[in-house]
View 1 (cartoon, rainbow, N blue to C red):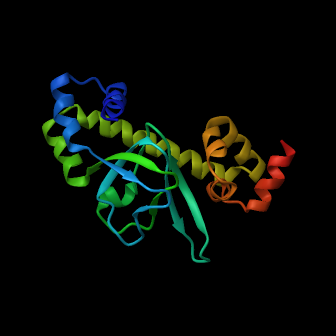
View 2: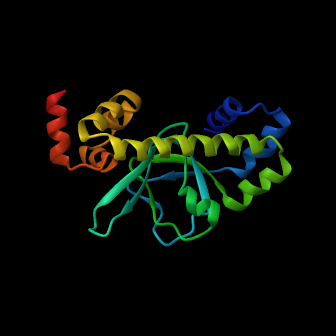
Length: 189
C-alpha cells in the first residue's frame, strides 16, 4: 500500500528518494469498515486521507435532513473536508467510508510541517489545491447550468466508476436528484 502512495506522490512532483523517505513516514495506514465515519459535522478536519482501496464520501446534511454528497474519493485520490482542514474551523461535512476502505492519513500538523522541511511539498500542495478547485468549480457549474439528464450524462462520461460501484441512493445524492429521477434517467439511456 505504501508503494501506491509513493507512486502517486512521484506522479505529481519530482522528489528524490531521500525526500520521499522523509515524506512517507508522516502517513499512517488505517482500515475502515463500510459506513464508518472519519469526520462528523462540528469536528475540525485535522486529517487528509489518501485512498489506497475502497471509497470515501464527503457529504453534508441539509436542513430537511437530506444528505447531499459533495465528493467521492476512490483509489489513488485524496479527500478531506478541505475548508475545515485549511481553516481549522468546525466542519459542516461528514467523511464516511462507503465500502471497506484502506487509507493513509496525514495530520494537519504533519502536512504543514512537511511544507517547512520539504520544499517540493509546496508544489504537491498546490497541485492538490488545484485539483480540488477544478473539481468543486465543475460541480458547482453543473448545478447551475445543467438539468438532471445533462448531469447524469456528464457523470457517465467523466466519472463512470461512481455509477458502477455505488448504490443508486449515493449516485442520486451526488447528482442532487431523487432516486426516482435517477431511475427514469437510467431508463432513457
